[in-house]
Image 1 (spheres, rainbow, N blue to C red):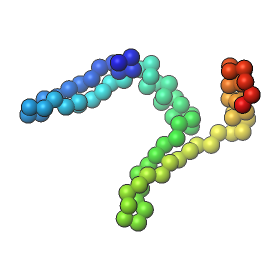
Image 2: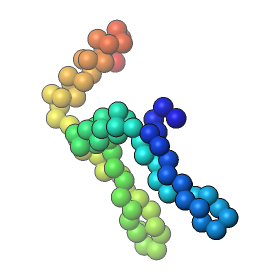
Image 3: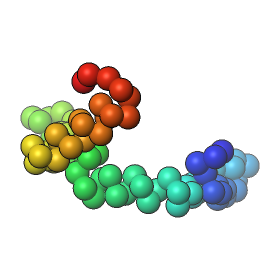
Length: 81
């Protein structure tokens, strides 16, 4: 539960259902920043013929930025990527 702030439940008949899960800001904000900056791929539903499927979109980063990220990873992990 270290990522969840609280969970809202609802009683429907004799069943308890999850109405909403509220995640902590410390998790949501960094994930949203990664998404906004193009580090996280997105998927969108689509129909191919008569089959419902999804397509994945990737935002490509500039070559200089990718190089900086690789250099930081090399320094952090003391390795050769």
